[in-house]
Image 1 (cartoon, rainbow, N blue to C red):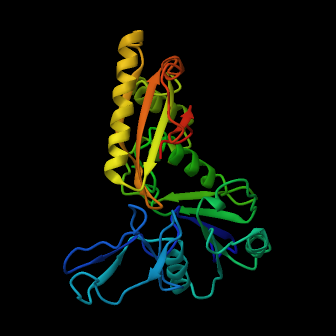
Image 2: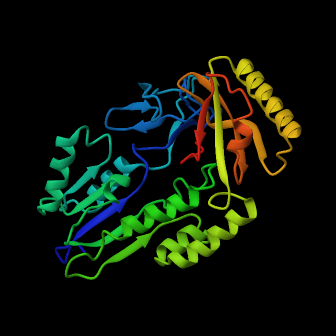
Length: 310
């Protein structure tokens, strides 16, 4: 594509240089002190950053636990892809478009204009590069780690991956040159990845609806999500269990056997910004009729027909 004077988009829905940091001697994984999530390594700033709460710390040279100098970085992010591209193709210019590089609308437009004008031959980025852009000179789209997000504990995870892959694939071949899309994945048998690679909506729909029907998930039913968070883990678990018992008792009294109660279980992530999180899910054709009979404390967050369960 470069030799033909065409442009390239490389898509990876993960920022930074490495997904997590681990000691090869004792196995310690560096995690955010406020969120139950691994810290992402950003090589340019030499910092470990939490992408949920913004907490950051200097990347340690030695392990805080065993004091060995065997800290290693695993996984890739957009920064790693941009660096690798520059090493392999030193004569080509690459622009990185993610929320780290494009801080504000001016920076965002400046980066896009560099690529659109042809000043840069390649564009690497997160989902910011996938939606709504028209680049006639782009003939090749490469998807790096298409599996990102596919194992999130949310029944819509497969749908989101399929949608995103289809959107980014649509950036190729919008001009005179034919488009080509290459998808790299560790799960080539996954139905969402296969359907997206084939651009086959009907195949994805049939497979996804079979799962939704088997698990009685929307659009065949409706959901209500009840979320509780607290800085004290024991208090959080007690309150979640208390409300679950109350809802079950009300369900028996009023005979709402058609409404299912899931949980309480840890939310994803189970700890966020210093608060432990537990949630309950009501599932049925009309879960509101049970919810309306339960006094939900104001400390709970109630989400009717939640867009996401994370």
